[in-house]
Structures are given as C-alpha cells and as structure tokens.
Image (cartoon, rainbow, N blue to C red; front, top):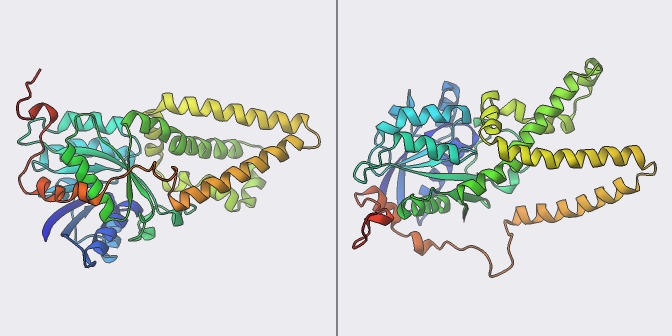
Length: 348
C-alpha cells in the first residue's frame, strides 16, 4: 500500500471532515493507500479537537511545519488567510506536491500560486482548485466549526474541480482520485465560469446576510426586534456568525463584478415583490409567485439530494480505471509533463 503524507491547513468542519474521511477509507477492505495526516489551524482549540476526533495524526505549530514532506496539501483555511498561506508554504513544498485548494474563488488562488510555486518541472508543486459540494444531509446546517466535522461530509456530494489551463493532467487526476476516496463525485469546471457561479451561490447569500442585518439593526425598532429572533432570522444571518468578516470581504471584493451582476438581478426581484405587495391588494400575484417557487424548490431539492442533474446517458463520467495508479505516479518520482514537454513537440 502506498503511504501518503497529507497536510490539512484549516481544521474547521471541512478540513477536519476531510481527515476523518481519509481515516474511514483506510479502514475499508479495498484501501490502496495509507494516509498520515498533519494539521494546522490558527486556533489551538481546532487542532486539539481535530486530533481528539481522529481527523489528524499530529498538529503542527505553523503551516510550513505542517506541509513539510507532504504529498498532498488540503487548503481549507478562512479565505482571508489564503494569500499569505501561499506566500508562506509555497517555497517549502516538495517537488510534485499537489495543493487541493478549497477556497471559494479560484482565479485569485491561481494568481497567488503562480507567484510562489516554481515553474521548473523538476521542482514544481501544483495547484488544483476544488469546491466541495457537501452531503445533502447538511444542506440546512449552518455550523461550519470543528465540532460539526463528520466522516461522511462529502458522501453524495461533488468535488467541483477547476484546474488552470496549464495544470498537468496527472495533478487533475490525483484530485479526482482523492474525491472518490472521500466519497464524492467529480465535475469539471473552468475557473472563470466557477467564480461567476459562486458569486450567486456564496457571494449573494453573504451580501443578503449583511444587508438584512444592517437593515434591522439600523431600524428604529431594533430594540424590540432583537427580542423576536427565531430560526428564520438566525439562519438568514448565520454567515455573519460562522465566517470571519475579512473572509466575507474577500469573497465579495475579489469577485465584485460577478457579485454586482447577481445583486442587480436580486434587486429587480425584490423591487417586483415590493411593488406587487403595494399594488395587488388581494395578493394574487404573490400567491402565484410562491406556488411557483415552492414547486421549483421541491424539484431542485430532490435533484440536490439525489445528486442527479442530467438525463440518463448525459452524465459526466470519470471512471475509477481512468485514475488508477495516478496517485502512485504523482507521489513516487514520475513528474507530470506539461503539454509542451511531450516527446516530439516543439516549444514555441
């Protein structure tokens, strides 16, 4: 069995769950790899808790210590720390190391990685962007802290793999194999397309949480309103609890053009709802809108829980056979070739 050294940077729910999923895999009869996992987090509490849960084998005092000798680095830190982490660990990575970057935006990470990772094939480490779409069982659970870590967090979900154009195929294939190991399917996406969509699915909820909370705390009735908070309010504003404000700033600011586009569409819909409430005394338009939304929501939730989006025969397929042996090739001395390194192909 291949022995693989993994470093996890960021030990809240996602990072710690990744470690638990690797440990679960090792207990299976068909396991082909053993994983030794080092972890680092800015909060000592997260490191201690992740270790007590069995998600990591050892805790590192700093990120450079964590990645020493690692074959795979899982970058699951708060987003505002990611750029500095690249600057810190990039020069310390072993040749052939693959970083699986779970950051919400991919284009900034590609740029940061290019600034610090060697371009020399003999010394290069490689970045593959990954966005984990989680187990549908946690779809309505906002808690992203280490206590919520679970080995099945990725079961029934998808790893959205977003490699840069010059990322070697072997590094991408390794990411797909790792996804299978922790229980996820794989879907490939262009980084620019990904960031445009994330503006809707991550940026827009962040902006809504901020706008809702700011609207109410600035209201003259906040003194009474704050007493009436129930799950409807808590769930709608939970990102302000679980995400660092600097991470939310980065999510919105680094992707501002895409976010502005989706905010404009949202404002149009809010305006239509407001005008309908103002002008439609009997609420017939609102009733139709809610009925349509309920039907479409039920359809979407069913698809999300089943993780089935295309008609039969149209699904994107990445077979286990297509990645068989890839991990060994990446880890034990066979360096990926870039396209312009192929035999007989001249460099421009």
